[in-house]
Length: 312
Ligand SMILES: [Zn+2]
Image 1 (cartoon, rainbow, N blue to C red):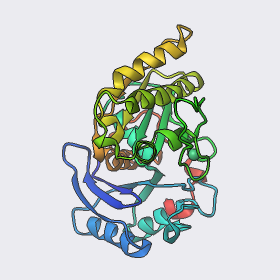
Image 2: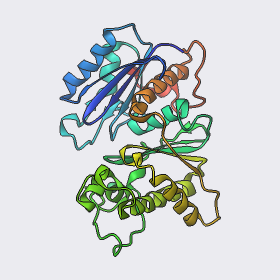
Image 3: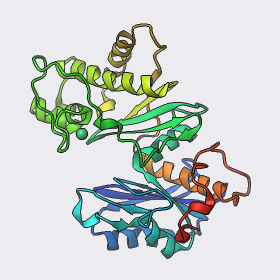
Image 4: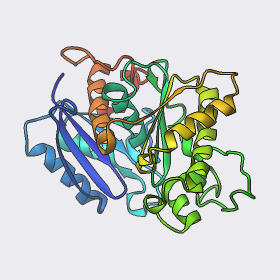
């Protein structure tokens, strides 16, 4: 495997890595400032060391990753106004002169769990992170799922019992979508204290498990999943796992075999490691990887002929 670069572009921090995977990668991180300076800082990280053959970028979104689009590689309609319509991937590509892969932070984390973590060897799974937001990436039939843009699994609607939980939800777009009732900010707004200060056994956790189980059942019925990998700060609460598994089995009621429900393995490095894995696949797509990709068919949905010129 060639030496590769990864950039995880987050709303509060950027993480950069150079290497081949978790074993040898060197990391750095710095706060997210204005786009120009922040991207320049990432470029400097790579210029200051042994060259990489491709760079993967795992970005907060929404992003444009339609190869035929004039704004391919851009962060688009983000609420972070300074970053709206920023040509992130193109800028990195021109500055370093290497091929660039571009996807969402959650899709990249899914790929990292697939390559090195809790989803190794699987054909169909979702990785979902439950933290400041809820986001998911799906690998179906051995390919990362994109559809028109990318999944927004946290914004599905779920049934609500407003007597049990009168909290109206805090998603700025939908109120009580799954993210609006089950993300860390939603837990804090409902119970008046941050999730990590709520004790084990509190009613908060039974409610949280029920909401996440409803999400999992929808994803499992739609996508026919072997496994659901759960990460993010909220999932540090171990008691959620048995509660979620029990509730998912109840809700499916014997109609489908429940997917395995497991913890993510790669923790806070999943996004940037996923960016490295995306970079590896980018080389494979163009037939340049010396020993072929270890990622199966990932990314083969993107024919070389359709890629925009600056990404060659
Ligand atoms: Zn929402």
